[in-house]
Image 1 (cartoon, helix red, strand yellow):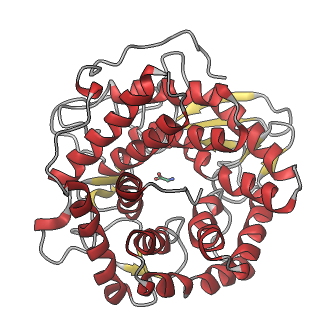
Image 2 (image 1 turned 60 degrees about the vertical axis):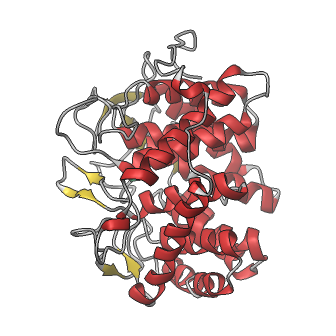
Length: 397
Ligand code: GLY
């Protein structure tokens, strides 16, 4: 449970969010069709490779299967298949499954909690959608590798790096909420509660220590792995240790709503709501967040990927709320307003030769990496939101 459940901030844009945005007929279908068109042309552009995490001048360099982000590409292919039924997307996505299996077998860049992002989209998705048993086996193997990062005493999953790296030891990050569905899924598939119990302990610790009294969040938090003692909150990609990194807040909204999907623990919905209100109350006029929520106007860069993740997270949250909950409609409409703003003003539709879908994302401003560029996860979550809006969608998570 978060630190201050009684702190219920009012939504400052309650009036705006009391109705969906006014859009032309076919607005959403056309927005999705643009994304699908881009995915189709990227099949040729990317060949058998993967887009780098962020673009350079709005074009993705191509890489091998070595980053935490490579599964967003097969993820977009699966979404495009669901959105169109065109088998080209399915056949292309299926070709990547063997490569994800090889990455595990050869232990290529697997010292990360992002095994959840990677194997949910590249392997759980095809298992859920087509019953692909090789994909299921790879995803279960990835869940086993992820469990090696769980510290029993502290009840947390270490985010980054080798477990013996003193700089990373005992560090959690808010993004990890999106890696937990792989563990819940593994318990459902195997009947072994061991994965689910670790996920439940991790989300409880993350919510207790990453969420502040006012529902803003730390990006990262350190624990003493020997005693389990909580140490301190810091940032890695945010403006400062005590600011609120926009994408982290968005991961928290969506991640809590997804953990609720598996656990039905009502405290997770309360957390998602508190995080959502804070996010929505710190947006600029056009509802696309700056890269850190400390900024609400001025020249700093936006992070369109935070907007896309939050929008899809708000859809997941609102669908989980009881019909009688007045925030159900408000959060759903907020998601539609944010996604409409992205569709109207943030796509690459008028940018010559871009291989991205959403402009104006930020990978890491402090690291000066992928600043004001397309991001593979921004494109992916924007597509998720659009598929959900146009036809309804059962998460791969
Ligand atoms: N999960 C890493 C990031 O959001 O940059």
